[in-house]
Length: 312
Image (cartoon, rainbow, N blue to C red; front, top):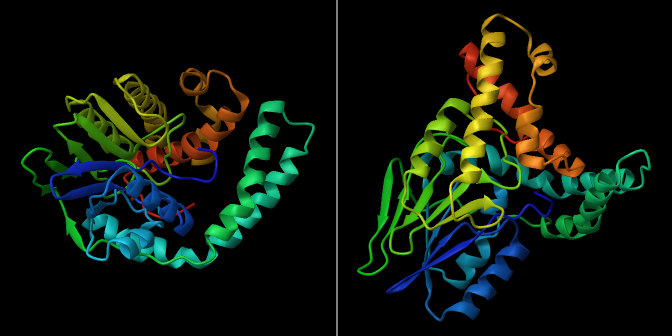
């Protein structure tokens, strides 16, 4: 989860062209990905799939549209709606927000009161921040040309691809891509390692969606970020974490305990160690990207309040 926040990109070869899952998080990264695809294959890219609406998975799409003008961009209907209604208004502020993050990171990297691992983490962010600011200087959004609600098939006689909505989890419109010939499933940010991402999520439904994901006979699971997985161990860890937070937060929320007090009364040490192993930088990332936001969503869920998709 260290910046730049680039999601994984999957290339699936079909008889008449390539199917791509996600597009990179900025115009420069999109151009790099296009160059790498061309190095791998002479076949054209015919389809680009967005797993969800977060910009680190789709803001590189312009390079694909330039390289292959006839490309079809596919997403769930909810993902397209969020890209237009939620992501697009934030684009003018991307460069400034990353400049601000870089300035904060530079300051934190020099803070001798912090553990060495935390200072090193902030130093990495400070080092890449100028490139991120430049990369976000000119952003254009490319929402999907074709949307679906439950399933979209990309047939092929030897390598068919299924694009599926298994249920809400990380966002309202998470798409999972299943390539049965390769026994590969691309999970988007339903699965993120080494620590998950949980801004404005749906905890109970996320658990159900992850259990459906585990039902695929996969040999490879490609998360939204992080290394390719060959088993279900990490997904089980995520399910356990979601269940732990819901179990502790639910009764307190239903009893009317305010969110700030709920945050203070939870015992999540075992959950934290299952992801971070006590690493101070990963502890910071887990709190920033997962724990704090998950508690908020679980609290709202228990009280029957709506979770509204938005960026932090």
